[in-house]
Image 1 (tube, rainbow, N blue to C red):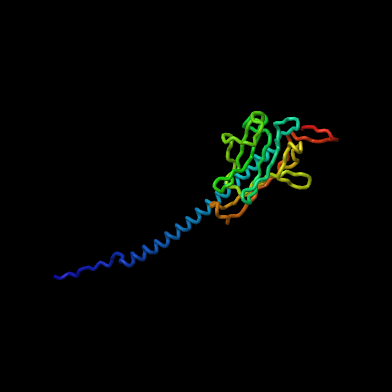
Image 2 (image 1 turned 45 degrees about the vertical axis):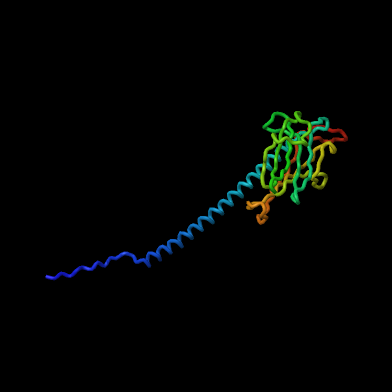
Length: 225
């Protein structure tokens, strides 16, 4: 008795079908990877921008408080408030020296803010010492210097003199501190390559009004607040 052989209808994928599936999967994975990479890059740029803004804002706030706590008296030869205008290949910077009050050292201290150039980068530095331990801060000591803010495009400190802002002030000549001091920090928001100037410039500025140790003149006589 003859029996018919059953022919199985289920069969596997052909080589062509497998190749097409692999090609489609590769396209999908490539698109997903590119989307993830672009999203990660965008988030990293935003994080870097926010961090730079926070650091700059914190620096300006600290400097503002120190200027508002400045101590100067023409009767004390160790007290000082002076600003100098400087230039690094078209980038404006300032040097600030003053006697003020600080939480890190008890009593009156001398503060020196300056800008150093390192490999084309401008870095704001700060020195702090006791006001009586070193009468002259024009020659800074590297051991007392700390970096406050990196990769700035400019850093200016201007004093109000009458109706205008001036970039140079010397209390040994004026015998008083200015009524208002404007602090400005300029930097690139999204620029990481210091040779690429395609980033957008951003400026953080604030005005400090010295209150402590300020000399006022009343009818030709001077008094210290």
